Image 1 (cartoon, rainbow, N blue to C red):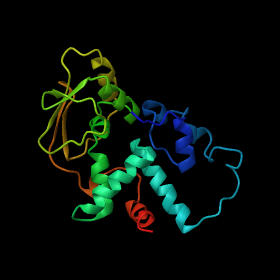
Image 2 (image 1 turned 180 degrees about the vertical axis):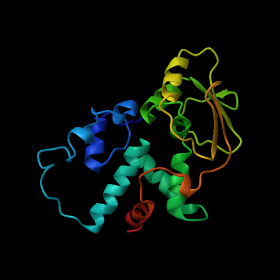
Image 3 (image 1 turned 135 degrees about the vertical axis):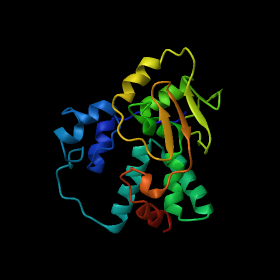
Length: 206
């Protein structure tokens, strides 16, 4: 499985805002953006030339890092979104939101997407009673997500639920039994990602 193993705090600093890549740490004073609010590298504090292309590129990079997706995979999502009916940018965000690793974070069953991917890869979660170990699995309306019976990750998941804020309306969660149901596909107003999807569409349309 291809994955990004680089420093996560540097990614947030590069984008100039918290992407909540490290779960609970992002809520403390140890957060990299809180400690050093400028971009990483020797030229991080220098003035950067702003251009239309740079703004669009940074938005795409931000979306990739927020959802933990690499370049080739992200481009694949965009191609699928562009072939669907409706608004391409909203289709793209809906597909990224419906990734199983992201859904676990939205439900509060994982503190970060990296933790969610590890839990999925190790076979701790089931969808409709079948074990799923693919983080990019696209959940569909009506599917039931549950923690595998007698798994060793139960306490880790319960600790993550304590950090949970509001659960999106397109999902339904039971933190007592650690189960959830996908009610429908997310609408754009329900997507909390700090992304301006139109800029990504403009970048790929060039």
